[in-house]
Image (cartoon, rainbow, N blue to C red; front, side, top):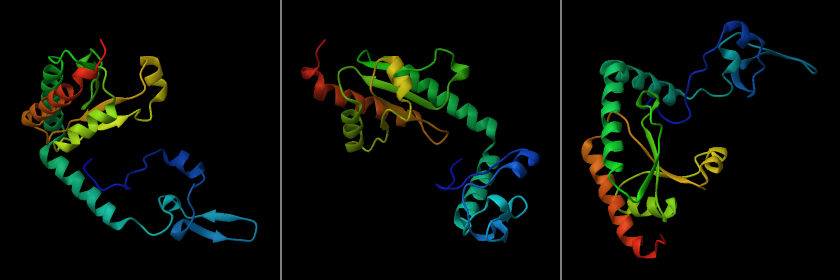
Length: 187
């Protein structure tokens, strides 16, 4: 949501939240402490251990205001257009394998891919040297990677602030990576 790291919102049914035990302790989340027992403060304090992440809360509030100002539907439409453009452009590269759903309505702003024969970490390093930031690795999805028969992927994430020029720069960087490695790739 464009907010600082380490901030979020816990949303749940009051009845369930009242029954839950906090997993962090400290600060104003305690009501009373006895030698053998502790009672917790009422919601929401029960889940607010330690010093509040004040700058995170302010940043999250600003991010929510910013997103509301742009409009969630506008953000979705912009993201959809940029992702469709990225899928179109990446699919023209015969040395790239895309790992995406064929159903566009189920697709997010994330596109996973590999350059055939080049390790994703090498691709990410080359792109980084060109000022293009992607992720590489198993993305906490090792069962999926095993299912796909691969160890890791490259992952480009797009949002409403990305442009077609960003996609073009990614494609240009992928071409550069492929050119650097193609003589070492076994067919």
